[in-house]
Image (cartoon, rainbow, N blue to C red; front, side, top):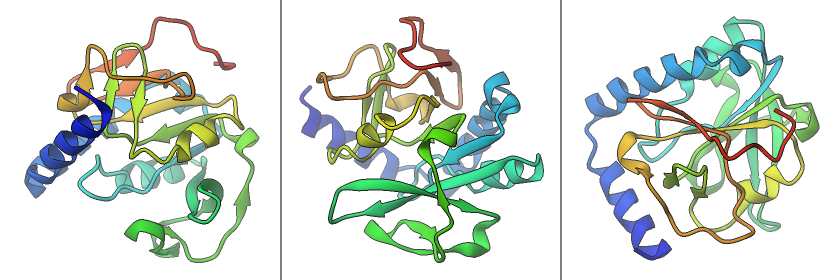
Length: 192
């Protein structure tokens, strides 16, 4: 299956999830993520703001803040097709931004190099850690700037044995679904 076909199929499968399914699966994903030792030990975590029936990250962000961690979220620069990071202290600081995704209304810049963990979204993943996003490369460019551990959240139906990957596609280190936590065995290229 080629990338564009896989993207269309994954978007459709996510759209077809009921609100109850998203809630149930997201809760299981959040429990698993928050039990990963690297997340427990992290001082600063970047977490995407969920949209379009992605695994919900609001509870994750609240749990991390309650645990005393600094939380940063991505801010989209559509013109330069890049992400910067901004600290938040809660969901009340968010407003609808680029692509209809919530972002901080007031930017409190965070450095990519200060992140211990980056929690990333995606449309499809494989067991080698390859990640397929929406095709613009925002997260690939973000990952170039940091050694943070990369943890992907997805539904189990988004995980494949193999997906198409190109040399510029940045892999993840851990994939968390509602059914499993997959630690990529190929050896990380980053510090963790």
